[in-house]
Structure formats: structure tokens, C-alpha cells
Length: 230
Image (cartoon, rainbow, N blue to C red; front, side, top):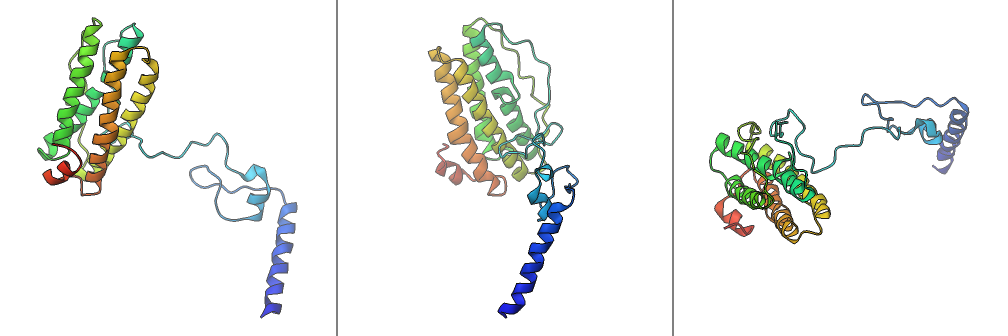
């Protein structure tokens, strides 16, 4: 048995030596990245490695792509206020990752599938978030327009897809507040509001949508209470 194993090993060493002398010829797949098929040429030559400019793989938490079911469309909105603090509150309200878009998304699901949880409870919470941001903007003399996303967002095909999409969207919402909190660090009122809204997305809405996605897209009243929703 031991003698039979020596011949393939020697042949393998010889094959590697020969291929190392041959010109490198990287193999690419249909998406333009280097093939992952093991080969002496690929591992021995830097030119066969994937290009540094290749598009990164999609990351978890990315909201639906434009045009996909549940995606937030581009809408026409008034220009943001010139005051940086007011502009931050405006972005929290009006951006595709903001509270107006969230309310419209969850309302689309309710209109399509009825008053199912967690969409009903979270949509009501988003209206309270809108009120909090509206007060901050009006305190700075900014007139707040109606929700430009209302009626523009199609519901996903089913509740499981909706819960999965909205869980990803809540991750993006948390990232939005992480950035905005850095921008308004000197303003106590906005810092408090942004921190509260971020906590609601991270600690309440995201777990609810993740649980719903694992439960066929909906939650029972008992499951909502177990997650801390009244």
C-alpha cells in the first residue's frame, strides 16, 4: 500500500513544477471573478487572483434593490434646510432610510395582507417617530410636507418576503442614525430623539421582523408580547 502512494505523489510534484513554468492563464467565471477551482497556476501566480476592483458581495442588511418588491422608490421632495441640525432631522424623516419611508412600507403590507403583526404595531410606532421628528423640525422653523412615499411602495409578494425585506431595512435605518448622531453631537434634543429612534429600530423593530421572517412572515399577539410589544 505504501509503495502505491509514492507514484501519484511524485507525479503531482512533477505536474506542479511543469505548470509553474507555463504562462499564467487565470480562469474567470460568468460574473467576472477568478474561478475557485483548485489549480497550480491560480495559486502560484498573482495575476490569477480576483481583481481588487471587483464589486463586493452583497452584505446582510441591505434593503431591497431599486425596482424590487418592497424597494423604496425615488420621490420628489423639497430641498433640505440649510441649517445643519435641521438638515439632519430632515434626512431622518425624508430619506429612503428614514421614518416616512418606513411608515409607507409597513402601510403597504397592511393594505395588501390586512392588519397582521408585527406590521400594525410597528407602523403605529413609525407614526410616533414621524411626530417626534416633525416637532424637532418645526422647532427650527421648518415646514414639514406630507409623506411623499405614501402609496408609492408595492408590498412584497408574501409576508415572509416582507418581514425579510423590512428586517434588512431596519438595519439600514440603524446605520442612518449612527451617522446622524455623529453629526448632531452638540444638540441635546436631537441627540435624545435620534438615540431613542435608533434604539426602537435596533431593539424592537428588527427583532420583531427577524422573528416574523422565521415564522412565515407574521407574529401572533402572544409572540408580540414575548418580544416586549404591548
